[in-house]
Length: 208
Picture 1 (cartoon, one colour):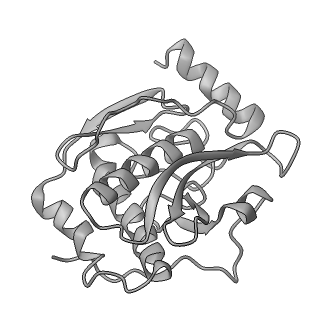
Picture 2: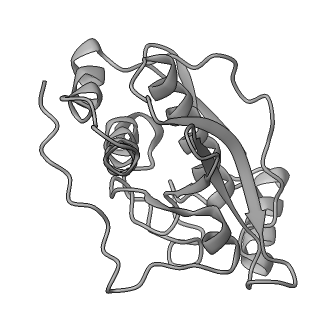
């Protein structure tokens, strides 16, 4: 049975899309062998997860050879976020998470944008700490909406080292395990949503 906080989070999600504030301090220094995954709407539930060395090697394989430029690195990041979602899904019960909040509202394992943004931020930190990001650095989160650009919505953000340009890394729009969407943050703030003429990147099989 869901507790009062979970019911409140569901109510907020239904009323406002993703209005619950993103939690801070969920986990210090996430590592592949020990990190926290948020789920249950508004990070109501937190599950400690550990990846086996062979699983993390699959993530690293997406960056081999190392991307030659920032655009290639963004594509690798998008694919890595999707792969990490697939790897943690069986442990967290989120393997069946549907893109968006409303399609799966109330389903076990469904996540809202607060869960997604928090988890993506965790994954970006892990990628950076592993030396896999040469052209970008994790840069917190951003929120849009309320009276501008529709429902409130939150995303993880990374910053391009050379230009300072910030990029939304948004995994909320897609079903669990699909590549994240990486778009300029300014465009995202203006209400960007995926369209048929902007498919996610094609990801090569991630084998060591």
